[in-house]
Length: 284
Image (cartoon, rainbow, N blue to C red; front, side):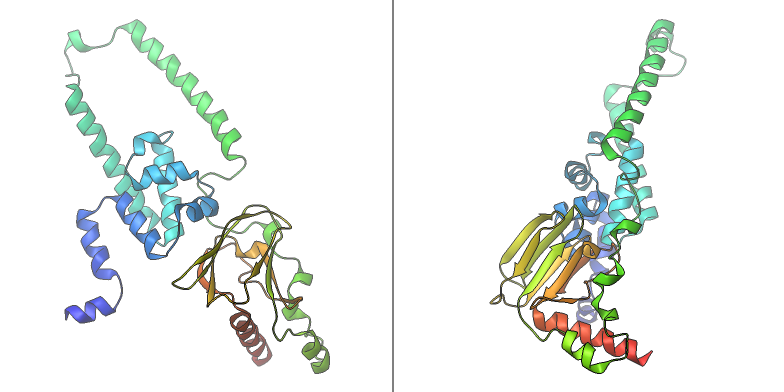
């Protein structure tokens, strides 16, 4: 029975982790299971990498506030395929436990003990400081995260979608077999071109050498080495990457802003995927 459980995937590990591991450990394990770096998650979710590292380390007090801790954790959970509601509840529990421990170490204030109650002046000072902090936090959020770039669902923006003329699968829609055959690539150099800013990519050989990793800005190109052994791609924004093989366009890895991992990008793999898409389209 143990061998059957081991062959089915990671479920036994997840069950054990739910009882023993912190939520930061569980998020990190989920990320590593998808073979993603923290930088990948940061580029995908637009959450600063230092905040993601604090979440994985369980240092929620290093985040701007309790709201940010819960919101960032939920967004992180979506990116690695975990339940956002479950993760949010776990973060709340850890925050509550941390607050209880801090209160116990500090001795706390016993209700009804006048010697330990703050004076009226100190209370007013605290209230004013809280208001100033809230206003500063509001401007910090609007300035640092811009419009809608804080904890947000992974939904593709309209301007990120490739223009219709960039989708070569439509080139053969005229029904002319000769035209479609002449336009279809048969092999050659594989080149990726960024059509927007902030497309984080990682090209590597399956089980081997890392070929390239970084953020491709609009107009940047990367040529997959012809001698690469089973080259693969990880990225959070495949919809911002156009592909050519031997100078001829092929469909992108995805037309939506969804994370992809371990995607084959050799000429043979991309051409096979293009043929499958054409066969499905003709069948419909």
